[in-house]
Image 1 (cartoon, rainbow, N blue to C red):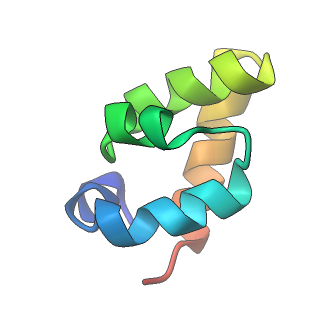
Image 2 (spheres, rainbow, N blue to C red):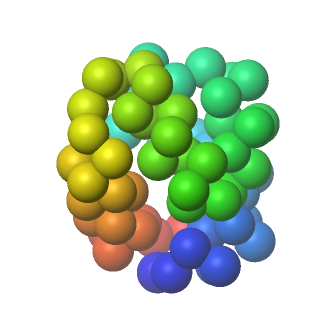
Length: 67
């Protein structure tokens, strides 16, 4: 699935995102609102990883995400 689809279904996707990245708060998810770059920034912030790693994780999530 691509990020446009995830963004369009963000309310449903939030639960799966929270399962994968449990340190993200509801406020973090509201700020991200399905936008990959925002989510990547929040993953970096909460997990202390490099941007490349956060992007890799987000891309893997998108590939495996099923509604």
